[in-house]
Amino acid sequence: MKRRILSLVMVLSLVVSIGAVSFANDNYSIQSGDTLANIASKTGVKVEDLVKFNDLKNPNMIYAGGVLKLAPDFSQVDLNEEYVMALAWVQNSGEFKALSYQAFNMAKMMIDLDLVNNASATMKGAVIVDADETVIDNSAFNASFVGNAGHYSSSSWGKWVNDEQALAMPGSAEFLNYAASKGYDIYYITNRKETAGLLEPTMNNLKALGFPQITKEHMMLRTAESSKEARRDMVAKDHRLVVLMGDNLNDFSNVFEKKNNAERSAEVAKLKADFGSKFIMLPNPIYGEWEPQLTSDFYWGLDAKGKSDARQNSLRKWNQQ
Image 1: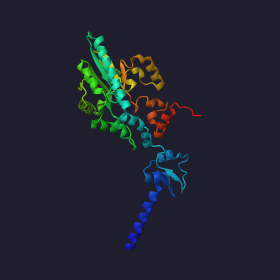
Image 2 (image 1 turned 45 degrees about the vertical axis):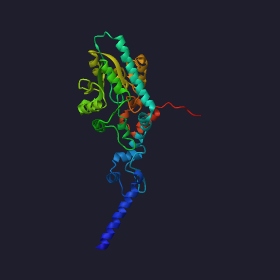
Image 3 (image 1 turned 135 degrees about the vertical axis):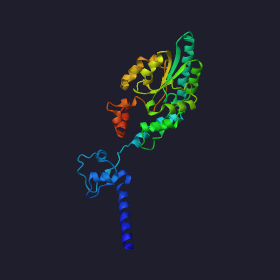
């Protein structure tokens, strides 16, 4: 009986050892009698992914002794590493903070100018601001994906918003409190989804950071379409729009919407006199509407390697001789 138990332990040890070798470094050593279907069952990697990762022309032709990749050569983990420089700059550089202060100083100048030029105006002035990466900093959310295979999703974003840990952009709360003290209405037009239950935690976060006029009337979250034009028009019905602030061109006008980067740049040139006066742009090198326009393909449908290639191929490079 003891010999049978000892033999069984040795067999199990051998199986574990073989498994460890076969799965080393995200590779699988093909055994005699293996098919893609049973390899998928053993490894938990789908057949279609095995075909894609290994560029198999004929999935029925695999041979004992060969090696199959169980993960792509370039994964989501690798793609997430491309965030590092932008995130390090946002979180650590004085230059980022200086640009943020500069933006809000310019906005304050526009308020002061409006107080002089429109002293007798009967219609109340308004300031419209985006939330994310305009008055609050969510870089910790994006940084949480570095070093792992996580990525943005409605679920991960909802957890972040409900944690109420976003920080104030440098100078943002001070400026908005100044504008409010001068009699201006502040409207927070953000594409955080009200239907996803994000209104209350967003208001809590903003209140904790000392922002003014955090009421349901002044919080204009997304309820249907992502375009902010209709919400801006609602404010404009009974307000003079003095300053609009955002990190995305779509925060200012619908002329930038649903256009490629060349078209968006052309629209910027047409409205260049408005930037630094009516339109105040905040720096955001982490994400934006420009990213999916880097390729004519459906960017969000690309795998990690495809997205990285689109970024690389968009670069203008010096041809070193």
